[in-house]
Length: 183
Image (cartoon, helix red, strand yellow):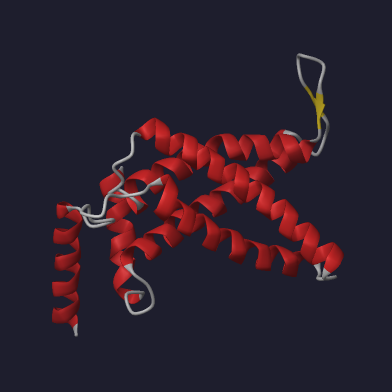
């Protein structure tokens, strides 16, 4: 699965090489794909699974449909996001998997909190429209998330290359050769 995802992402990378490094492109591709999946799962869960109705749990707690939809999408996209970050975007990390998972969970909690804080700030204090507030918030949170994942969650040793593994380097060299032939 990892090789297939890398092959698809690396196929499109030559078009973006001038604008960003490979690691940043992989982060954008994996994060963007996971975000689209998250929103799709949320919409399907909210509209079709929970049918916009209160969810009654066996333990007597009622959950609003939008929170239940969030829990469903989060349960799928959290482990998928961790897997892609660990194996596709930051494969050079030397930290143990359980440490990475714990740090990734902390980062996700921070990002959820930052989303809440910035949306409230931009809407209530800066009087921005909610959609514009969400766009600005997303830009801030994505930048924070990338830097935190690179420097903390999936930290690599100084000697360990952050992204290119031997098979990745060979694939990238092949793509570069093909691009030269086409040009």
